[in-house]
Length: 110
Image (cartoon, rainbow, N blue to C red):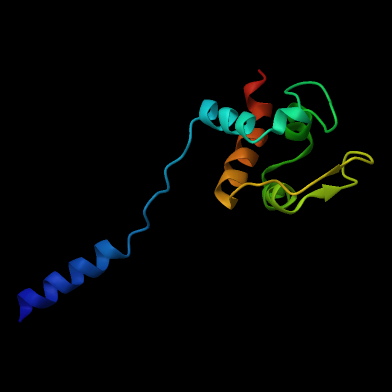
């Protein structure tokens, strides 16, 4: 009986562990950005139809992460002038990866 309780307890502990989601390298996220067509409106350093990725990185901080993810998924208007960004065809995980990549650009500039 004790053996069954021990096995049950171990099963519960190991089955409740949070599994880490696989992360993409910065280069893989940059490729995802290209695949999703972001460079049609955004350049790395200069504004096109939308702001540059570097300018976005400089304006926003970690606390803005949720807002940026929502902007990608739902679209946005009026944050960078009169041009609107339509909702992007991304999964929520892809949007989070792209936002993380953009926010980290400010650290990669040095």
